[in-house]
Length: 209
Image (tube, rainbow, N blue to C red; front, side, top):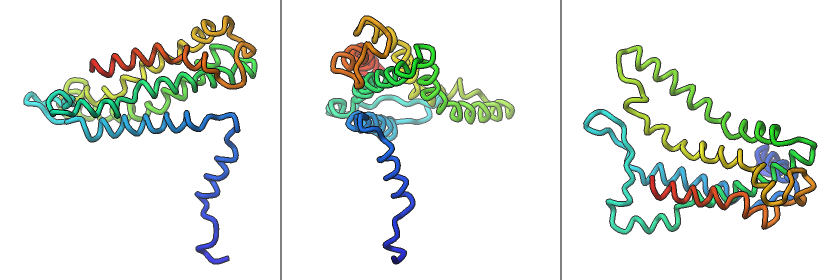
């Protein structure tokens, strides 16, 4: 076998990940989650006008109201409700997995919150060190001139509240919190009850911000 015919290591790793994925996992949900995140990043990167204002403050105004016809893009790119809706499905699946193994609300919240919040620690750490250096040189804190840097993280607080509400939503939907209360896969009823309210909150918030 020539070098060009040898299977690539990354291809083998990808195949292994695919094979390790349970057959019950809904790949459409994963696609919607990934696509929503990509659209959010693209929106903030290309459609937000980040610049320094006259008083030396970093600002990121939304240009939708100033560019004729740009409002139409929100019909395609306003995907945060989709993100929260499929997140409700994923949270219910996560709840099922935890309770199936005998866990409860405490274990579920600990696991989900760790996965949600740990990735932002490096970001906060880097900015904290940068801010200390900046202040040591006699300049203003980033919290004074660049708070907008952290604005895109607003949805983490909202999503954390959604995660915290999962045990309550499951109880409302099924009347009890054990794994026996739900099937092996999230049903249409559970999918709707869990994320609908946060989706509406997300839609209102993103339209007002």
